[in-house]
Length: 152
Image (cartoon, rainbow, N blue to C red; front, side, top):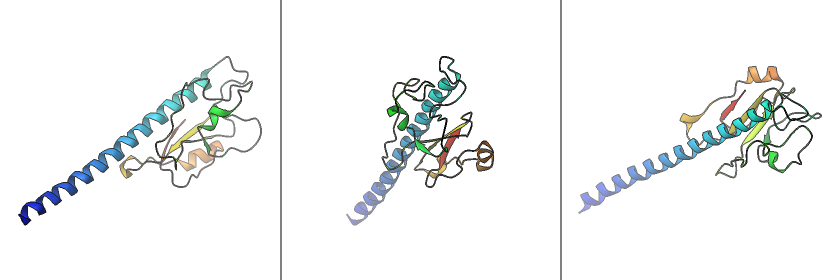
């Protein structure tokens, strides 16, 4: 009887670990897909020819410095003459299931390059930011705790 309980305990601990790992990977996959969808919205804005200021990414501001900002902020902005909101190009902006880490974006000083960031739970999904290249564009190079970056 004791042996059966021991085996059941071992099997339950393996099943629990496997379940937790699988759910982490699933959330990370959703994050990757969300960033890809957001990047498609960024690209649509860049290619749009109906905006007054063309060939820039959403979030472009004519004054001020560029810092990592929440992608969700691109929903609430009053549309400006240069189509600053992302919701003009993507109907629903995805949000991370983890409310501690919101999706972030950063633009180069000329708004011709962008980076999107997310926090991944699984170390196998980390993707580092090329800080040397990004610094040459004039963007912010650091974002503590975030470990997955895409952009152009």
